[in-house]
Length: 384
Image (tube, rainbow, N blue to C red):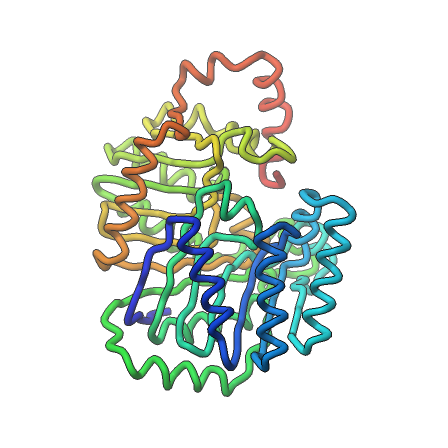
């Protein structure tokens, strides 16, 4: 979908994005919409919920959408007492009159296999939206790298319209309000917005055996295949579907400089299985000449930069779940106001001491037990 923005502000710095989120909630006077994969009961998740409750009580129509499967996964990071406190805060928000929804796909097999929505949107009647990779958790604002943008213009309405595709409810008059605000600015930044919720297209077996199209995957494959000079990617753990992996390997083999930045094994304390799934591709990537980096703090941003002239960013991780189980969205731009900040981010990543290059030698030096686990679990990487 083609849309446009009158302003696009990159938010790579964690404190800047958090301040922007809080300011939007505190300044809201009419309505607020937020979607997230999960909320953690920590100073960030609980802090934003406190502000949302206050906003609802002063008359702001608050709409919060949380993914059901994502919240169950996030619950692993919390104690029983924290989960109970979080539930009580969500009840308080509902009690104040807010719409608090949990997204669950229609089919039981989809819910069982991790189907859900992974899109992160926050916007208000002021005509500004925040769109990116961050969850409402300490990890997103004190730990991992994340990337979001603050947007104004017609794209804000586009994002709110898409809220329905990921399980949310939208008040029609709020769309008209955003139109009026957008008319005040010159929207000269052309964007494309790509969203797919595969749960809508699947039959009784859900993702099992599903061979449908995912427009976000298709757009990324097309651009990787068209690359001539360089490709740079960030993802939480790089374990993509075969079409994306093949496009990247083919690009490297024809001489394109390809680099992948994702998370170190220790960046996700709860389990290393996601890293194991990613590590099964290391030999193929390294043999093709792909430069692979692991970030010890955690790389949770989702940026794809091709030839320094085309950039996509949003929620899509390079993993099977993003292709066949989760609603995902990416914004695309060829404008220097979006491509240059992305190029600067990759420059920072290459220089950062926490971002370590993976080499054939480092892989060969892994302990035998780790190599065995990669062999043992590698066949299940679609589900890890």
